[in-house]
Amino acid sequence: MGKKFYITTPIYYVNDVPHLGHAYTTVAADVLARHYRRRGYEVRFLTGTDEHGDKNADAAAKVGLTPQQYVDGRAAEFKQTFEALGVEFRTHNIFMRTTAPFHRSAVDVFMQKLDAAGALYEGDYEGRYCRGCEDFKTEKDLVDGRCPIHKTEPELLREKNWFFRLSVYSGQVKRLIESGELVVAPEGRRNEVLSLLDQELPDFSVTRQRVKWGVPFFKDPSQIVYVWVEALQNYISALGYPNGVDFKEFWPADVHLMAKDILKFHAVYWPAMLLAAGERPPAQVFAHGFFTLNGQKMSKTVGNVIDPRSLVAQYGADATRYLLLSQFPFGNDGDIQADRFTEKYNADLANGLGNLVSRTATLIEQNCDGKVDHTVEPLLSISGVGAAIEALAFDRALDEVFAAIKLGNQLIDRTKPWEKKEESASFLSGLASGLVAIGHALTPFVPTAGAHIVSVFSAELITKQPPLFARK
Ligand code: MSP
Image 1 (cartoon, rainbow, N blue to C red):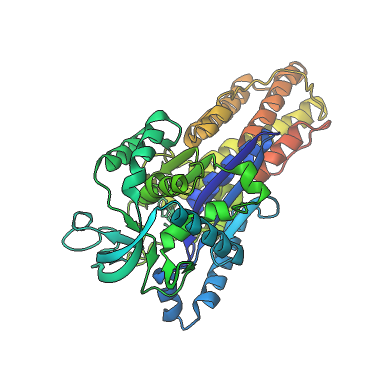
Image 2: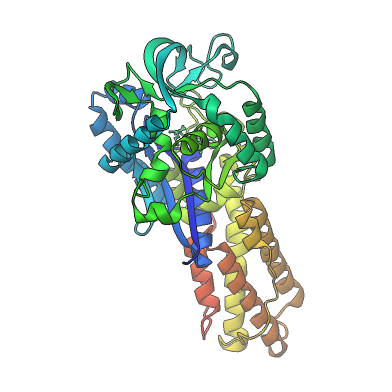
């Protein structure tokens, strides 16, 4: 059996338009998916939309649509946005929607498994609930009685719910994380989850009584399955759980990718539910940082929300992907400096990479009649890129490639091949080989430009190239 790799992003709430945060995680996951595919792995890559719950139903009511009409429209927008960013949904890239009928059936089966295992019980919930987070809140989660993320006062709930016996499974989850069978990364996040598991974690609700927009609970159809519990199951329903071939071949997931805001659900609740249902936990849960935009929190109130499609219109898909992932180390919190995108685009892509490509091609055409010796060793070495991508250190991978690009330009400046036409053939061949390697290394990040560079510099005859990234 060939090597397999399954990577997921969160499925995003559709109560609003797609924004840079969604683009960030999905592009990062697409880089990994492309990398592993190129290495010969069979890959499944899932991204998509989380369409049930109050948050989405409220948004639909506000614009006078039925929830289904509303989520259909928004889901299409998310899909188009990801496509505009170079994510293709033609083959084995899954755009998952939780209103899909197959998801409902899978949720039914999974909930039945939890029930059969004795993991569920009926009780009364009394406490706070934040619709923005779609999460139950305790006093210690709040600041001055408000949700610190949404700045709203969570509503008081008093309703009949079915609960999951987290207390029975949390010890097992902790041991899995400690033994490394379930990797939670980066290290700081792992420690956070372990200290969470050291506390007495309350059992959590798996159903809601008052919410109407969702998947009915098989045991009591007056209740719907709590939106988080249902949404997490998308990772297996998308593979055809319980009997689908893909489920057998691709589960457990290699990486669930997300930001740190939803780590508890992925690193505690989800593995606990899987254990109870008799399924294996994911191999890795990786939480990247949360970013601000030009130094400010992204929010509608601040008015600084950027539609990724407008960036694509301005810079193109490749450059937008690069500009997003090259800002700060992937696992860290950071700032996306969108107001400096043009500067960075010109420096790195137009003047750096674009210039190296066009200078090298022009010199080869002028000095060598377009011919190079493809057996010459690359002058530019970028041997650590694959390992950096696999460690999700995208910034490190890009730093290495761009250091090589800088070196290439410096070598041309120093060697001055235009002054010694006859002696420059082997130097230019070495540069061309280096550019083939650079093209390969960059392909997961900038798929169109990467493939173009590879094809230009591995060709029989190398011709003068127009600018790859026109200056802005
Ligand atoms: N619907 C849930 C996820 C269910 S998964 C079974 C949800 N949706 S969300 O629309 O709120 O998306 C949250 C995710 O969006 C984050 O975990 C992250 O992947 C991405 N981001 C949103 N804003 C972001 C930043 N400002 N910074 C980094 N990532 C961002 O939670």
